[in-house]
Image (cartoon, rainbow, N blue to C red):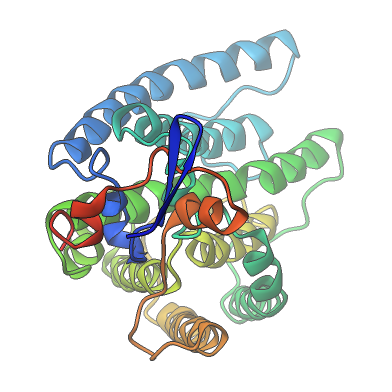
Length: 338
């Protein structure tokens, strides 16, 4: 293993690239078996606190600004207060997950971004390019579904500043809500079970029931949710990051919430028609496998081969900077992460 002395630090070649679910094993510190337990406990505590504090703050803000109060179920898509509570309460999962991985996962500068991707950063360029295809397809499918199976209370929303604010809340908080669910139900399980087990299937399959419990759909909706969760897990593993899963999730939820302002009952879960699966599952599967094919071609991978990376460790080595957090010789030879 080559090294170059630079002052008191020693520049060390980065470890062999790892897939997303095994990324904790880039360093001996983050690869300890108990690290995921600390991340989960810390994240659960932060999330519980956020769930209590955030709705209270939103309610107080609504009173001070003299806004219409929330409904009992927070499910009116035309009510900005309902949207801020329903979407914002989930959106807090983004900072919660980041802090849990940083404080509990032992991830210093070289490892902080690996919760996003194996490149050690959130790949915005990937989202931008894929979004040019994903967003139009998902928007068209949801619009056609909305027109073919119109809700019984379909009506034009009354023009008002409250409606404008509702649209602003949807555009701002929906991407954060989707990102939070992907970090909690995809990133966290994949990297938790991947610290202990080599197969990514554990982190893909085991969180599915929890994701289903979090949605109060009927059996049709639960099938849709389960297949969606599996597809997002596979996509996260394959692409080496959470970005494409967030993109697909956001494209779907954002268009549905925007259409939902034309139907006050659209946020209520349950009673889905079996026909909805014909509109949701084929596009989901086509986009999932299409993105997997695109990444395979882009990165010169086999279709069922995951993208690998070394986070900021490989970036630091390529730029000639020292890597004080890089792994030692035992890890390079595979004695720690195998």
